[in-house]
Image (tube, rainbow, N blue to C red):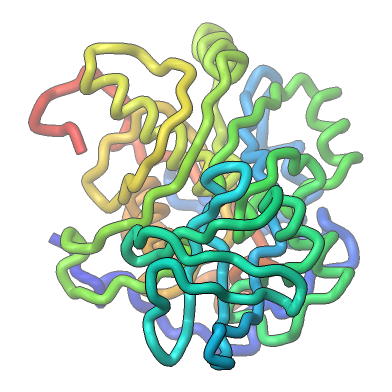
Length: 358
């Protein structure tokens, strides 16, 4: 049984990428082959790592300007981070204040408009907006960068911390594996015969939530909303029929597909189109049902995402890959370089057994 220290490693702070590279596809790509071989590529060489009729699954979520400074009626300052838009005029939010805000109290955000505190949804609060909240958020909010990026976001970040295929507003963090793709790369992939499809998972603050217990099985993920459209299910079926690989672009695409497949299996169904929420937490021992390969960035020590990739490719292969990446000065985290992983052979999908359902 793995514990939290099993997913720790020493990362030199200078390897934490603070800025995006001038060109999206100029990042590096570390391929971890099924036999554990480590291959160093440029990201533009992804074309040589995939085959015609492979399927790339992208997350088309769009990052919103989710951060606000605010003032309570008493004059006290607050910090607000929108977690999720829940309706035309409602959203869940984290609120940092000297005292927990009371139900019905008013906060003025960005000195521009007022929101009313509604019912709690622990650890979040419901905010009631005076007008369409997506519009107010994008007019008056500040762009959210991860806590390990130390500079204030500017207009360049608003472009580069957004994928070129983002369509559906609602995330407070980017699906960062997708940041490496530019339009020429996408065109080249399609010309090679690689299939592309999208789903939506609105990334929440849980992606940065630390694991605070040595027993990782006690950790509880925040729930995130996702949508798998019928067209994606059809693409996956066609990919399987062709004997090719389903490749998740990012851990968010993987979590959405694996959550949907797991829940469908529990009801005796195959993967199907769905709009739902998931708090799936993938750790070593999980049985993967959909994804064959994973394109992802390098993740934080002791993070749930490091546990996920360790579950996918094996704990020891990931440890070796991370040691290699550090020795070769790869760039880490959201603005960093990428990895291409293949599911460990022992974790291949097979007929379900009740004792293996996660």
